[in-house]
Structures are given as structure tokens and as C-alpha cells.
Image (cartoon, rainbow, N blue to C red; front, side):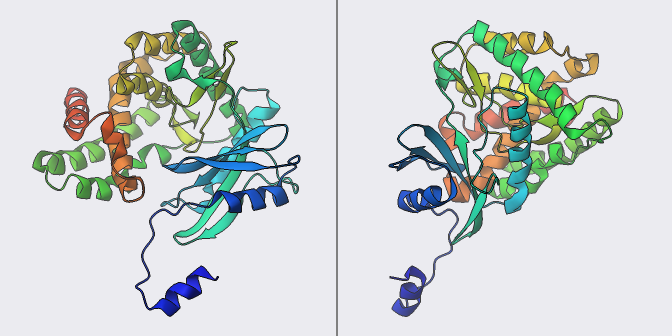
Length: 337
């Protein structure tokens, strides 16, 4: 049956769709046609969330397949992440990277009720999330690998590339949704636009002062790195990759430990490992609290923007009171409020 035709003929109203879920059978058919899989293929939906993730398993290997959620981003923006990961693969960097299709391309697209969505299949990251394998020694090694990631980013971008703060300020895209999200919180309605506007100015000032920008993961936290029983680490989920302040990228991980309620010692070990490869500049150190606050602002704004598709699930960890207090306390200390 043609689903669209049957709906039209039924006379029922056609619903607006914020986030559809692709059936595993559809994924299996497409994967068989597009990738060099071996024998019988099984596909299961693992997570429905900010993006949808499927486990794909043939007779020899497991893969993770991502279906990007339809957002304000152009569907082909995923090429940035996938091209960077292909570069990292050539450098033997420990990251989960896209598997090429038969024609060598790294992603494909499907038509869905909400619009075209990008799809890619990745190497399976062995082990478990760092949050399930907590260790200061491992956190140190993750930090060192993360610094190497930033250095590799400079090479990938090229010595003549000029980094900007444009992506670092993309919380502004989500600000209208955040204002709707906190409609019944007068202090938030007043304060968040002020903080965002002053944050814009501060970030431009830091860039002009030479605080390092580069190619960043932009969403690195304890669930986005796996550790196996042998201690091998694999970085994953580069969906938000783009240009940003390197120290923002570092503090995202530090803040993630706080968000999940882990000991601060893991964030400290991560920073120590990072500095064993690329020491922080004095200006980076002086602005750590600013970048920690920036992570919280990005999260609450992004959460608001995505809530129509994935709900308010992030609030199961920290509520708007906690997030607002965290952001505003540091915004005042940083002269943004």
C-alpha cells in the first residue's frame, strides 16, 4: 500500500512530523544494496534521540548506523564530519569512522515526512562508555588523544585556513526556541538574551586576542568515548564537529563529568593528559569558567530547540533551576550579566 496515498484518500488530516523513525527493514535493504556486507544481515534500532542509531550486524562484523535528525542544518553538512573522520582514519587516530559505500561515498539520504535525512554507517566502537569505565589513568589518556585530535585538525584545515567564531556562536540559532521553552520563567526570559549577546562580544574579543580556535568535536563528554577491557579508547559521535575554541572543546568534557555527577578528578586528569600534548595558553586558563558556562548555555538552548522532536529528556539529569543557576552565576562572574 502507498502510505501517503492511503492517508490522502482517507480524508484524515495530514499530521506535521517532527521526527519519524525509519524501519529496520528499510535500513537492512539499503545497507545490503550499498555496502560490502557479508551474508545474513540483522538490523535493530538502538536509540531514538538527537539522532537515531541502529545496530547493523552481518555474519562477520557489527556496525553502527546513524540517521541524522532533520534540523536547521543543511542535510549535506554531515560531509564536514565524515571527511574529517576519513582524514583521521588515514592518520590511524582512534575514532569510529564512516564505512564507504560501494561507490566510495560516505553517506546517503532518504526522503522522510519531515524532509531529506542523511544516513551513514560507522565502524563499531568496541568497549563501553567511559562513564561506565571510570578511571583517572584512562581519562588522562583520553585527554592526550583529544589534544592530538586538535593538532590533526590544524593539518586537515591547512596552514592558510582562517578560523572564525561563527560556529562557536550557533547557540543564537536556538535562542528563539529557548525563549519559548522558558516562557513561564521571567528571570530566564530577561537574562538569557543578555547573556547570549554579551557572549557573542566576548568570544570575538577572545579570538582577536589569539585564544586558539580549531577543528573541534564540539560535543565531547563521557558517553562519546568508549573504552574496552584492554584499555583501548575510541572517540565517537562527531556529529557537531566544526570550528570552535579549543578550550571550549576541553571544557565540554570537564562539564560533562559534572553533569553526570562524576568526580571532578576525571576532568582534572583529562586536562592533565591534554596538556601533556598541547599546553593551555594563559588566556585559555583565565577563561575556563567562561567556557564551562558556555557549554551549559549551549546545552539548554539546544535542548529547547530539539524538544519538539525528542522531548525534555535531558531534564532527567539537571533541571532548569540547576542549569539557570549554573549559567547565571558564571555569567555574572565573567561580566556577562
